[in-house]
Image (cartoon, rainbow, N blue to C red; front, side, top):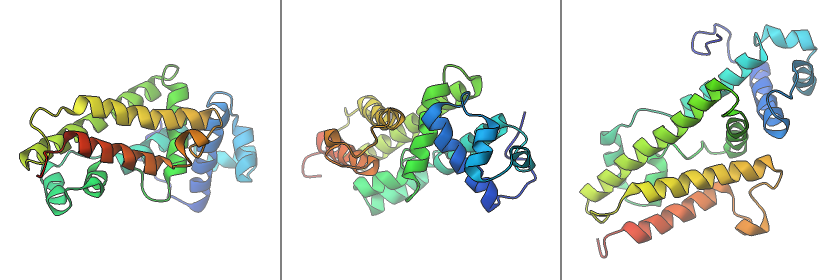
Length: 215
């Protein structure tokens, strides 16, 4: 099995382009339905030349998932979350702590990655495991954030994260599903708001519902 962590090849502009094109094609038409020849053509390479950068199509998929995990996952560092929320006990502070947010300027790419996860999670064991890890990671961080906000007396003691975890997860998967169907995230249904704006609005509502009055 290809291991992105021990792959000796450098991260070149061509490899980056391959990964970005692959995410787009996999999201638009499916992983199994996308051929190496088609992907190579989208990148501007001959089919065989692509193998100089990745040993297989599966290796590209594993690289994409590894990249997502590296950028969006992390250890739940309660001390770091406490420091951030003490400095900014606001939606911005929560966003800075959450793994559910995407690095600025990369939202569209990571929505495509989520589309691939949605498509393949029941067909590919690697994807299925990865989908569960997305959920578990977000749950862990959300629970720690709630715990810290309660300790700071900013959230009610009986405020539970379970409902909000489901809302936020559903929001992200809804946007991924809409992207998958070609609707995108700027339709009239969402008043032209982007995913980041919708996530912010959801967190603002969460703060209103869970916050201690006059905290």
